[in-house]
Image (cartoon, rainbow, N blue to C red):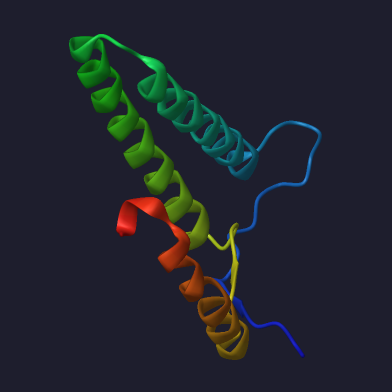
Length: 107
């Protein structure tokens, strides 16, 4: 089956040894992904409520920044997505929907 991509026309950048706009934005996006992961772990492990609140605020700001960078890359055609295959989605749903009755917190 042929995969279908969802993307915008690519904004061209110079192909030189120096970092270009796309490289910088991609680097910032990777950094924000790493930071939100680290903040999430810290929030799971912090015992002080005030510190938890501060981390949650910073996490939200970092997550919002990550989303803005993703939107910028997608808008400029530097990030594409694959269209989900409806049949595969239905199969995954059927496979995992039966697991919910095995989870202790839903009973």
